[in-house]
Image 1: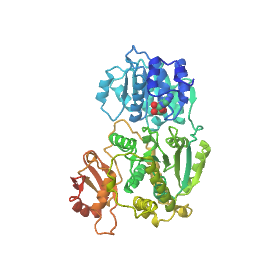
Image 2: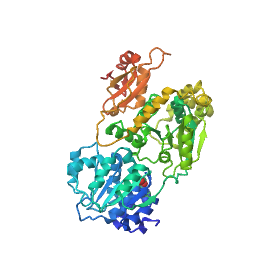
Image 3: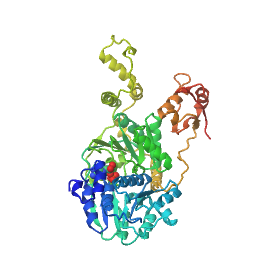
Image 4: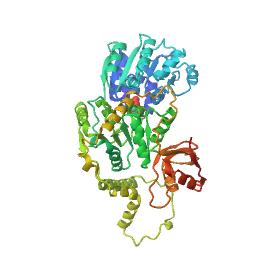
Length: 565
Ligand code: AMP
């Protein structure tokens, strides 16, 4: 079966997927479509995100669903609101020409009353997150008596997010005659247990699993002491200009810390993790999709809801425990026929863990040395030209007469001047910096002090608490580490004034520039909201900032800052 037309799917479905550009089924679809169309057994499919899972189960089900009945026949459970919306959207697209088929998404973080109202449409298909489905069951808003198919999508994720009890309740609330399909990227003990208890003699399919590592991704690792990790990360980013990347961390706290570090250093970066409210996560994901930021620092779970195909790099800031998670993370790059690079920062004492990952995944991961300042500048020069020569949009026109007479300069001199201008800050930063590689071996043992170990243990605990990025629990905004030396300001401008993080950095720098040569104010969190913003700076610069900012303008608008409560 190499083309969809060779399947027995109905013309309405073929027409819809044809319009979406699907011609041939993906590997998982080749295996599941004929199985679901002809078999009554349960199914366990090992498949990762991006393999075409949604179509794999929904196309054959749509083919068989009874559109004359107005009862729920298919229930899809998935871990996050983003995935839920994505799956519902895909199914609606596939059933575009099946006018009697209705699909409804139900998830936390959104009005339950509105969702109850939308259920009055009598959808045959429900896509939901476990917590919200339970809430709706408790309110007697869902009738599962006619369920024919139950899909557990990303079962491993649902379990690691702590939805075990909810899944078991839902599984026992649905008719025994249903057919259950369990999709999971990894097969761990918990998934195994759920399948043993709730699936009957399941057929097993495995696609894109650990042995099918993508060939177009090159894997690198860099050994670096704990205390140099952030500096090493900065160097990796600087040495790979024009990147669009996800940096994976293990805990929410680490994620926020790394993102704060990058933002403070002027990168267009942000954090995505389960401590953010749903609205904050939506905003970050939107910014990343639109490329308003090009670096996303994320936990494994939070990054799941994000569907982007053009990542140039994946950076493992911390190694995951599970080798399959390493494959999964790395597989976020190198999509859609492009090449990708996966870079891992390894603490000296993690070499055994790296060995395990290498042997379990059979991936060749090559050691590289953290780039030196010179190498970084060289890469940046290349990056400038790459951008100059590949991105030529004529956004505005200008009169050639505006260009001064440059005949005294050679072409090389001009290019040289332009590069100096463009890369000045970076070159100054790396001017007197030691190479990290020189310090690497000194740091093997003594760098990872007892204090750091204790800190890592705490982080482990933080991780173990698990992420439940759903269920509409208001966490009351971002809990951040409180830094006694910083002061937080309310600022009267926001997104509606086209204010960007870089503008805020610039404004703060200008407002605190003071007597030349003085040290610069440390800048903390910057949060730009629709109508206003917040930023943090070092306390000792408070007076100077308040004095100066009121006489400054941004795009012709007056600026006003006051200490936030
Ligand atoms: P999924 O694993 O379901 O998230 O799908 C990953 C991406 O592949 C989605 O953007 C789908 O729209 C797309 N896709 C799924 N099946 C096919 C197919 N047979 N041909 C082309 N694109 C597909």
